[in-house]
Amino acid sequence: RRIDNGRDQTKELVPAKFEAYRALTCSASTTVSFPHGIAVVPDVETTFADDVVLLDDALDGEPTMESKTGYSVTMDASDGYGIMLPSLAERWSGELGLDYTTSGVNTRYAYEKGMVFTFDFLDYAEKEADGQYTILDAWGNEVDLRQTELILTTSMVKLWDSYESCEDYVTKSMENGYSFGVTKTCPKELESERTLNYQFIQSYDLDGADVDRLAEQTRAEFTDVIGGDRMISSLFLQGKGLNERNVRGLPPNWAKAMLADERVFRDPSIRNAIYSILRNRIDEAKVGVLKVHGNYSIASGDPYALCQHIFGQPVTGLLKAGEIYNKYWADAGSEKLVCFRAPMSTHENIRAVTPCRREDVQYWYQHMKTCTVFNAWDTSCAALNGMD
Image (cartoon, rainbow, N blue to C red):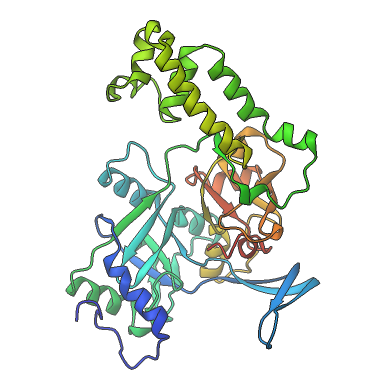
């Protein structure tokens, strides 16, 4: 009864999907306070022309593959994400014990899952919608956003149309004991170093010079570790999380002892242990586990385009085709990035994008500091293995 949550059981559902939605009740999450007002809005769809590779397995035999130029694509540009006010992000961050206001959280509620990113939609209403605060939700009912902290999309609320209204959905969810939960948060900051794997680079046609350049950072690290600097060796052994704040709290081990006494570092058995670990890393590097200047981040669609949609405006978005926004890379001044998303099966899963640093983009995404915002006008999400 509680799992069904008062849904309209006459609605026809795909059994496999429905069982996956039911399984959401078993998701591990941390409970947070209930938002001060929720709205559920329709997803925003965009249509554009792009060059694609079409796969068709409808006929018997092997699938067919055909390249199409200027192919008409319709995309759900808000698939799997919503937006929350900075006030809610700040409150939830405090409840989760974070020492920063998160850029976004992965949420769970009754038949609901998806990312919620920090975006000031009230500021948007004032500046971009001429002070219009009333919108229509997924059921066609008016919602005053001044009484709302959280906006979910219909792609997040899986059975939204099994309820008469948002109020009906929330009331039944509360009656059946559901609370909002968070399964993951965007980090405080993004790392500057990341390791590749064989999938990411196996489709490239690399010559010797390319391999040398790709392995340059990894080779430099190995040289430093072998070179006899105990500080570098200890950092290598302890991992990227070692810093001046947590070094004293590390559990006792010989890698930590090296920092306290150089004689430990010079001990032959310790040196042999370091070489043994390093040999394993060298073998991994030979099959593509290489360090590069890069980071992992959670992806978002363009919240500006979503706001245009819910306010009934023409949808243009802030980002153009081929552009992304990521604060780290905007600040770094990078001109081009390469995006990978595992697991990969073809070279077309790799996307080259341009980091955008225009002032308007930086203003509207000022609260989205450690995620990557993708545009609503190209097939990057589809190419990156159906990323939502």
